[in-house]
Length: 101
Image (cartoon, rainbow, N blue to C red; front, top):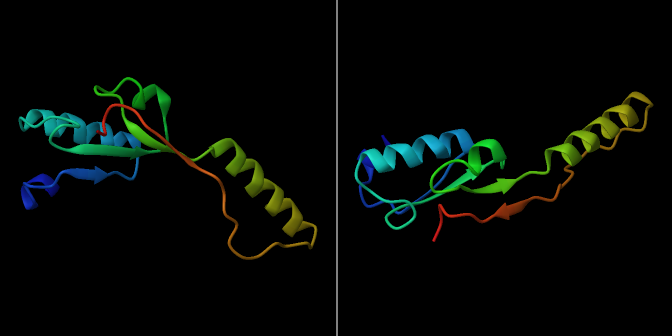
């Protein structure tokens, strides 16, 4: 739908690597090239998928192990009556691969 709604689109940031891989396939089926005609970025850095997609996906690495550990620590602190309300920023990084120019 996105490609039909705006045929001139030249980049898409997807909410997951799975969606990005599907978009790469759809772009190819429509005769366009990634990243030459349209750049694609995923989210999750699911390496089993992001490195095997052709071209390999540029994606956001959320460092989910650290995120989960930190969430558990905040939960245990709250259970102990030492809640830490507010926004807690976590590091992430862009893993650049071949789906972007």
